[in-house]
Length: 168
Image (cartoon, rainbow, N blue to C red; front, top):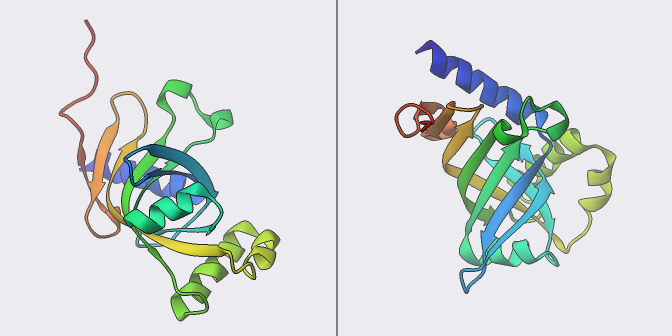
């Protein structure tokens, strides 16, 4: 369907533009926490974040093995603040072993995406590189343009809730 193809192309554009992600995690008591981190998203839609062990969300994500990631359009370019383009992804989280092949690949991609600061931060042993593996997501591209994204690499798409908003 042409609409779905266009939506997936817009998702690609959003992923290519956004450099940070809002992270959602939950404490052992079920208390929610939101934070953010610079992000790199690979071709399989795995989000990589390099975060300090001193950050509250790090211990929560490490303990639960889960995180929510939101990639959201910058306010300065949004047509409407009530309908900013965004992709929210439910993820399973794992810490990549420092200096392993996959860690080195992830850090190299983070360096390419975020520049010189990563060259300094990568030597900090109190930081962990998390790989957040997508389970499913919600793509919002404007009013009445909400989609479920799922499957390997979040490449499958369908409507959310059957057809948009209703007015009184």
